[in-house]
Length: 168
Image (cartoon, rainbow, N blue to C red):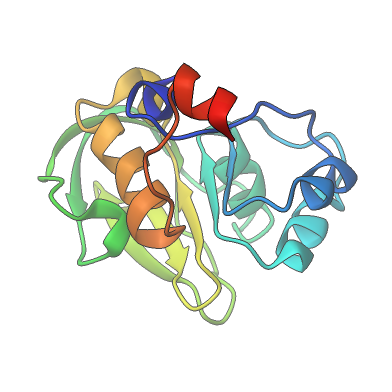
């Protein structure tokens, strides 16, 4: 809704790689943990920018966490590293879910920390971003993060209005 309010076109799809591939999307935002363990491999095969939020990011990262990892869940002070996703986003209190120590795969780096644990990670070469919060509900700068993803990372332009949609 926030991206549509900013005139970006988007569609809500069922969580399946076949539906995503058919769309030829400029980018994908995933908010729920996938039902299929193969979903993340299928998502990577699409070769489009992806932003995984909250439960989706936590499910992905849990594959790389040691057993019994102590997590930070709740409101915590988050510090952001230099990253396109967080351009113009200040450090501050955010609601995080599942921040823990992870054995990150090659190419991924921590781009935000909460109490010394990763709150966001990214593989910027593959344009894969994982944020352990649900920005559309809990983050004071959530709209800015979504806009950064749409414009700077996916290269989308805001054109969507009812009139623009009809014209296209």
